[in-house]
Image (tube, rainbow, N blue to C red):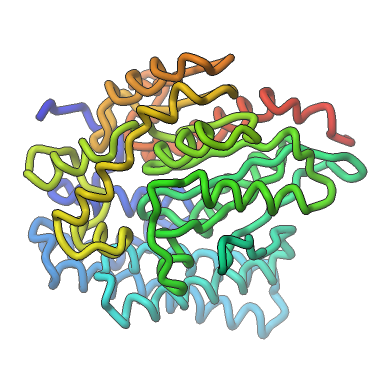
Length: 397
């Protein structure tokens, strides 16, 4: 496998999933000195990446989450509401990061996840965030989501971006990383959705990932169309990491979407999965990747994983995309090679506006989904979406 010059801060040189997760936490508000305090003692375990190591990872981050929550509680009791909110949100990212490397059947993992949800909501309450927790009707159930309004859109109908997750990213992470706030400042509302197989839909509702992402996308579109103040003719979709399959898949089968953004390209997840399972593939995002895949997909074997992921190709969807289409990709992405992004954009032959934005060593953001510099990606996407959906015309300041 070709070696790339890494630009991500690699606290654990012998454990890519751990280093990436730490960088993600920092991007969402973690404090490096706090993280170092609990991670330095477990550095010798990182190379093992076994159950003992991942339990130590969990316990280290949970200890930070509990401390931050305890301090937040003290602030709240003393009337220091804003400080409490900030600490609750740091606790949320600490719990989220600890939960990330657990196994699906772990009761401890579920408890940690619930602690994350509780702290996240407590933070929203203390900070007076305009975000609204909503339920998106989907088949005979519903999908949990966060709706964030556009700034300065009072009295106007504004565009909205539906944002899907990845394989292991959830709606709360997108919020804590500042994504909806960045779009809102440019006049675009956002709907962050935990669709089947991801986040709360998976952990608390047992909903498994479907290759037909146009189905939850259609449900999200239906929901957006019911809300006042949103322009049904200016709705787009984006996805991060495996969302680089989700978003263009949805756009290829759902003509109501007016733009699509792949934050990291994936045009054939079956190919990626086959190589990972036979040991010739790319870096993994979580420690128990195969077990995690079975959990997300509702399968129980490698054969089952391959059966589902073999249906996760964009060959049919890409020629059907008839809206503007943006791909962001790092030139040194260790999970998804740049060639896959090039193949994806070249196949979108009927899109009226295509762009492949490649982040280089000169710009920063060379890693998977720009984890080494996520702000530069979020800013670029938000500018592009605001331009495509003509958000500026609705602003009232």
